Image (cartoon, rainbow over all chains, first blue to last red; front, side, top):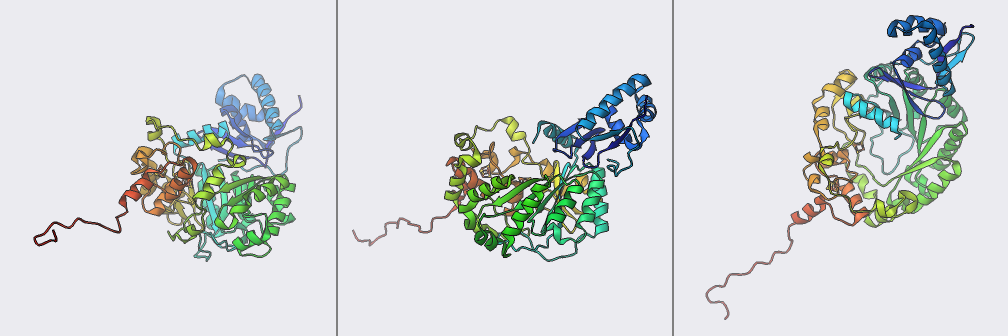
Length: 103
Length: 369
Ligand code: SF4
Ligand code: SF4
């Protein structure tokens, strides 16, 4: 399976509120909140770390889930977030200006 | 406010997080609006470095919505540097400006930076009225051009109109202009006192009959009957509720670093040059005093018919002398809506001494029989 890379979209606004990430889409100001898994994925989405590595190092460690199931879930989550222009997904590393680390 | 934003605001309230901050970058301005509440001299604004540090502290404190305002924000030469840094820290950035210095290039740069929305002040659709309020010839044209440049970049633009005697006849014209430009429009019938308490701008505010006209305009208020209905009696929940978001999930920082509960509530609570933003927010005695107030604690308002539906602004009440007292301007609005005098109005009427006192002269010996 080819690798996927994910990057935070630079046009969103985001803030963590007690561990729950609030994200406002830069396209239409729709507000989303991410659960803990999605928040981990979002925070690790630096454009250069492959998704499988993020899943293995961040998500599986935190939640003790089966890596292949977790990767499938993470892929569909990443694509869903990409539909809302919150995340960018690509088969190549994403080197363009990505959003700064959210606090 | 969307449902999710409401949920997040409730969570921020529980956690004592300042979700929403207005930061005025400067009080300098290229307009001289007749109703403005600011002194436009620079008394030592925060430097670029100080603002960046403050933004970091605010991000760490959980601030999500950052409204940058003034004065005129474009008077700051470092505006784009500040904006870029704010966006790097992932604030949802909203701007308030007169738009006079926004051309196509600025509109594009703002878009590239991911600014969320921009509010532009427009007081009339007629240059002779708008420019007579801003005291800057040609300002209406420039502000409208700015709205066009921004709208063409796909921005959410809001035209903000303050209602005064001078432009009372023009609010429909401003609304029509906003519709033609494809942007939203808000109308505020409240002229505020100056930050130092000087109440002279209030003479420009509209009177009862104008307020009544505005509150009965379906295009503005929707269902007039509902909007002007006599409010339901306040129940226990109402009396336990908070006056507004100031000091609870929102606050204001001046260009000199002073932190207030709200831009319209100039109660000094600390200064970010001397204290950490979060320490002021959490530990300032003044902020905590504001936070402790519930509707049941309000001296006059808690007995008022309007209390459950009143737009009472604690900041305006503070500027009248008592943050737990009534705000006369909101009394006027409640009266204009419903025709029912407020507790404050009734108390004032009772307090007016009779100017002519007629006393019975006791019958005295030798009086004419
Ligand atoms: S009611 Fe007054 S003090 Fe409260 S948020 Fe509104 S303007 Fe500020
Ligand atoms: S109408 Fe006046 S007295 Fe009554 S609640 Fe509002 S501000 Fe207070």
